[in-house]
View 1 (cartoon, rainbow, N blue to C red):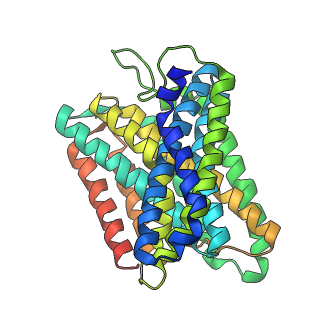
View 2 (view 1 turned 30 degrees about the vertical axis):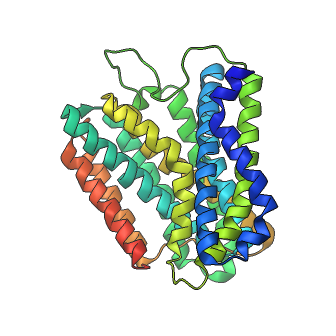
Length: 361
């Protein structure tokens, strides 16, 4: 019991934050925007703590059950956190563009932020870092196809036919995910692996200590419940704090994307410093792909259920940023080695995204 208390201290911290969050909810929301923003920041930190433990237990389960179910657990757990926070925030402040902006922000954060920073830091420390170039090409073309179908083409779909195209999008995304999962865990699994001379293993994954599957399942489910509970109050506090401030709409989407990406950022940076760039490519590009092909069908299904469509078509600025990002990724991830210059190009694109967000574009 003592070991569990010690290992799960981040989760217990998040659980402890629920008590004052709900007990004092009305008091701090009515105390003004500054107090509301401060509370929102603390709750976001608590949600990140819980998401780190959810990611850890997903890793444990993935190692226990093996592929293909392990891969499904890893991707679904990451997307689940994002969808839970996104759904709760939309229930309090309905926005037709929040889904689109969150997916866009996640792609910018994963490819330009995580991959860029990891390749930059790893390149400075190790020089050129090898990986399997088949993975970069496969991820890139699938992200391009998925985003084109779900976030570019909708601009040209008549509003009267939105539900028909929405249903088609769900089928297309699930078809892409099914094929991708089969490739990643089946005959083409070598596309996403690289033989390192040192001991193999997922950076940041659980160590070899035996762990009960039931316990990990319980903590994973409990962590998601805690995230949902905290997101409920965090959403109200954040909306109250930002009301009337003129904050850019993209800020909320960036918060959602950053919450789900925090575990990935830490894992990718550790992998880059350990000279394991294949793990970075799988994390950054895989997270982007999973966000698109799993979040889109879930939210499109919600739109069909409620009868209210989301605005999924990207703005011209967003389309240009995605195009530049994917072109840069196609060039940089084409030769089986990354370096600091390639990392810097993506990181500058991420800085550009942050600047555009600050400008409200």
